[in-house]
Amino acid sequence: MTSIVASRPRAVLTWCGLAVALLWLATTGALAQDGRFDKGLLWRLEPPGGGQASYLLGTMHVADPRVLDVAPAVRAALAASDTAVFEVIEGSEEQLAAAGLMFYQDGRTLDAVLGPELWQATMAVARDYGLTSPLVRRYKPWGLLLLLSLPVEQMRLLLENGTMLDTLLQDEARQAGKNLIGLETAVEQVAVFDEAPEEDQIALLASLVESKAESDRAFDLMLAYYLERDLAGLVSVDDMLEDSADAEVLARFMDRLKTQRDRLMFERLQPLLDGRGLFIAVGALHLTGPEGLLERFAGAGYTVTAVH
Image 1 (cartoon, rainbow, N blue to C red):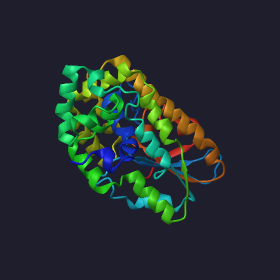
Image 2: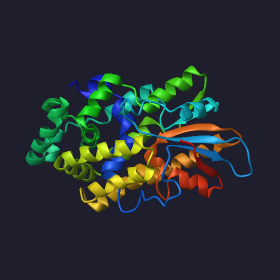
Image 3: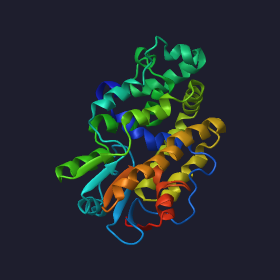
């Protein structure tokens, strides 16, 4: 298999938000659903006091053809909106620069950072992805974590296709003349991982390497729940891996990767929602939990209704 960085340098940064968070950073009720928003990926948001409705879609950042089979309701929601909002707008040079942050630039190498035992176990997994020792040595722990968190078959689809649901929807929005807006920059997304303590990065990578088979099975289950539009099932996958890494490490990453970003996304959406309807597409994980986007919109007085 060709190296992901050599052939698709931006792809890892695009897909990582949902899968890594759900499989490795879900912890102790942070994703729990209360029953109101358990079923559905596309939601209509009707503002308090009336006005134009917006639509919120939970995506999955993979190239699986079943995920790329866009439902008519989703395309209708996109067509009804003049502005389409995504986590990050694809195709920017900034994404290439952000991808470069996955690698050490200070002379260190991953084998020296991990130590002989963890390095050997890591390479045993990395070889299945077509990654060679000279390349893997260049990665920071978090960069390799993102690569190895995606099952080999899904990585193959990503390399062959290069189009994920978010990318597909952005292309369709451009072709329809929509205004595209990103809620985050690629550098902001990378900072969630790159600014984390290195010992936390190593702990999560070690956990993944030690339980790779369980991780891949959890991903398959997560994908099945997504295809069923089952948010409650989606977030329940964390039960399979709840003992896979130190709880404090997981909690720190979850706060950075989900809780803080959910709050920032909601804040940045407010001026965009003023007097107009939007089509909003973000990773499905960001819809879930007591501080997720669905709860935040409901708490702000919006009528939140499942469409699909």
